[in-house]
Length: 258
Ligand SMILES: NC(=O)c1ccc[n+]([C@@H]2O[C@H](COP(=O)([O-])OP(=O)(O)OC[C@H]3O[C@@H](n4cnc5c(N)ncnc54)[C@H](OP(=O)(O)O)[C@@H]3O)[C@@H](O)[C@H]2O)c1
Image (cartoon, rainbow, N blue to C red; front, side, top):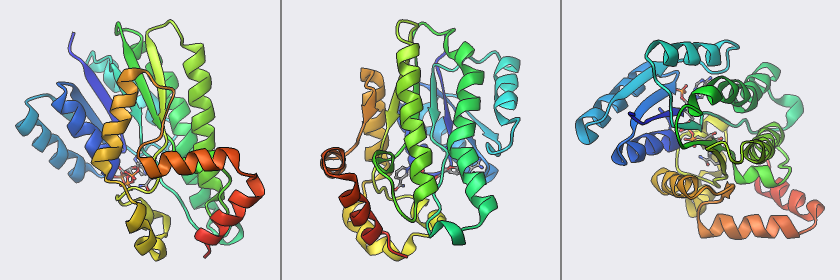
């Protein structure tokens, strides 16, 4: 049986790295995001370099029927992905009352609702494989409340909690669920979130998307529940876990001050 990996947000920094590294491991890749030209260029280079199938499916995942369309499309082509990576997502930075409501709701829809819908739609197909994997991309922001990134951080906390619960429910079914919690990573994320003012600071802590994706895939194939890539992120996650919430929130508010 041919092995397919379906990656959302495949046109972005971390998504591209997932796609290339899975192709290198011999997986055929299905690439989903909105930017058709970027997906096509990536698919073409993957086909050339790794000699696997690379299919692009341009789609806005924040619309209600996106998951249904993906499932219908997989059925039509008789593809049952062995790996699902729910990676598409973005953040919005700023004080809650001044952020645009529609943008906030749209971000929340992509970061959480799309993950619920896609996972629900594709679980039967993942189950057709002897062994299959779901990797949900959360963030170290999932471990704490982050003033000025409140809705984003809460959406990532949702992903972490949902992933852990689903992992438990699916024990013994052959479908393994892991959650990747990256810290600052050198992608288009900060620009999209409006966090460019912190670019210099981020530079000091940024990981490369290749390293983040490599850590994610290593953890996924080992069947880990939570994957925090990089030593700095591991240390800060441990500090956040043990320090008083009030203190951590004050520190975050200082760091992300508008
Ligand atoms: N970079 C960081 O510092 C960092 C830290 C922690 C967690 N993360 C998480 O890592 C994941 C990947 O982000 P990244 O860092 O690689 O950022 P990125 O380069 O901005 O990539 C974001 C991806 O999401 C896709 N996307 C956005 N809106 C979409 C929509 N409505 N429908 C379909 N696809 C959509 C984008 O493609 P299109 O625009 O073409 O649709 C792009 O492929 C996200 O979930 C993010 O929250 C990032």
